[in-house]
Image (cartoon, rainbow, N blue to C red):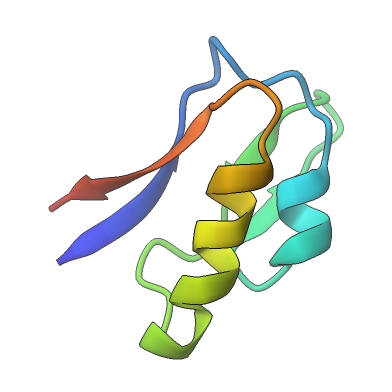
Length: 65
């Protein structure tokens, strides 16, 4: 099973991930994005893939559990 992860050393808080897929990502008050759904339904995988592709710093990836 794969899950989305964010490298907070790379995250700049652009927020595009939470704009593209608010079911999985949220931007918090500390200015960083967080995964709020570590096991998104398969129907959301395309949106997560788009967030991974659009992240300006490459901070988002799929990780194997």
